[in-house]
Amino acid sequence: MRTVAVIPAYNERETIESVVDGTSRHVEEVVVVDDGSTDGTPQLAREAGATVIEHVFNTGVGGAVRTGYRYAIRNDFDFVVQVDADGQHDPEEIPRLLSVAEDADMVIGSRYLNESFQEYSWLRDLGIRSFTAVVNVLGGVDVTDVTSGFRVYRVTALERLLHRSDKHWAVEQTLEAARRDLDIREVSIAMPTRETGSSQFTVETFALYPLRMTDAILRVLLFRES
Image (cartoon, rainbow, N blue to C red; front, side, top):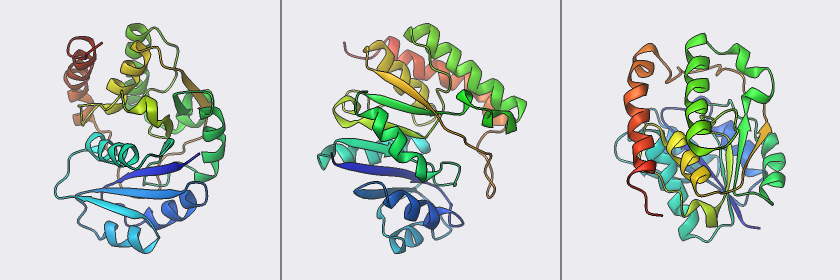
């Protein structure tokens, strides 16, 4: 079972080395997709032992993980572990996710199967719950944390899920998986709030979410091939 970790990163110099080091203990290769960082993140990732793919400019998390997925597909890996670069995801949980993934297509680490979501602001909590509810209704599934970035994918399934949205990749991808009747499972994973840097979740981004999420959903419902 060949497994690669994909870590999207944008200006994460304070945490990238420890994340790469911890993740590398559980996978065959660690790929950091640097999304236009200006703080030296790519060099630190290389020094920590990661394969680094650099975007010339910032595309958003969706664009970064899509680049990592394509790397996994081209290089014939069996599973992709997706890990955030900010230190919120504990690499020691990777074996648990991989164990469940042996019999599934997509495994999501959920903050809503434990109490770690209680540390989040009401705005962020509302956003996550809203997006999750939409995917559950339209996809006929029962997930709890559709926006989680701590995931494992079977590559043969991932080939059918290469999203087009760079802003709401998780919504588009999970809804697509549900509508294709792929096996989606969740594992309880504690995810405390980040200790360094700044969250991408702000009042401004929240205000734009309805429009962006509608775009992601329409991509799946209207423009996907059967």
